Amino acid sequence: MKKIALTAVALTAAAALALTGCSSGGGRSDTAASGGTSGFAADAKIGIALPDKTSENWVLAGDLFTSGLKDAGFSADVQYAPATNTVAEQQNQISAMITNGAKVIVIGAKDGKQLGTQLQQAHDAGVKIIAYDRLLENSPNVDYYVAFDNFKVGELQGQALLDGLAARSGHAAPWNIELFSGSPDDANSAVFFNGAMSILKPKIDDGTLKVVSGQTEIAQTATQGWKAENAQSRMDSLLAANYTSATIDGVLSPNDTLARAILTSVKQAGKNVATFTVTGQDSEAESVKSIMAGEQYSTINKDTTLLVAQTIKMIQSLQQGQEPEVNDTKQYDNGVKVVPAYLLPPVIVTKENAAEAYKNSPSLLKIVQGG
Ligand code: BGC
Image (cartoon, rainbow, N blue to C red; front, side, top):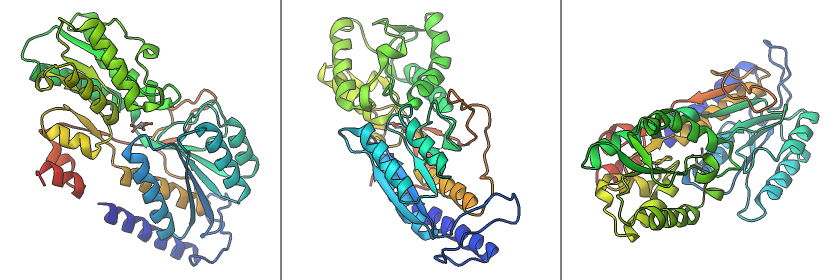
């Protein structure tokens, strides 16, 4: 899959270069015939600023950007925010990319509210900004957003929790559940949670679901830094305080790393994971194994190869002086403007549809087939 996607990107790049009559590495500044906006050199510098490596998808994205941008003829500068002093380091990395002459900077923000100064600097220098996976907030200087449909991710997680409870708990409603959300500094966390609550809240209100701890506000459910240890210790406390005699039937978990931490806590408390439902996201290898072993109930497939390929397509349009294609101009209001977005569809994955869902992902398919 990775190979096919990258080859496709390279071919598109070659075709685009042929059309503009420019050779890769020629260093010319091209202006597209249509649109009238000026493009930039076909071998221009492109900055990729990614957050700390809280999930496998971020690691994969860095590798795919490095190879995909190189294949497309650009000069890629891929940086991760380090685990400590993360926000300040990401701010410095973005400033350095601007100073070094990047024409486009793609940002997977550590904290999308704290880059306003750098985004203004970029705008003043004529650098285009693409928010990648996480929206950049409270700034007019965000040109495009490319992501999987995050609200839909939440809806799929909420529905999966309901389906898993009915299939695994061994009893009819009401079901006892707890809710987890992601890191409060990540704009996606609220979108995932709101999507899930759009499905779960009516069921809490009608008594189908009971949040035994009473913790239903996003602030009460947050997992700082998307860290497994924070989810595990909150789950330990929830179990100790509320479930010494009551049964816990399920947990809404916003991603795979946290789902596995929650499962560890449930196991350590001596609870039966076969009748317990926990959701996830990212299709991390360890979670796909857990799903096939009948522990984690669901994950979400957000194929990083597709997201990176779509981003590179946007960069190629900008290089040619054209407007990149978007398919949503309504949903992603960053507090100052609605950012034109290209959203890809997420796919829910359980044991039942895993073989189909991963048919184009050889390493995950191998896990599903027991390899
Ligand atoms: C991403 C998720 C990921 C989380 C933690 C979010 O912004 O959309 O896929 O699980 O960050 O890394």
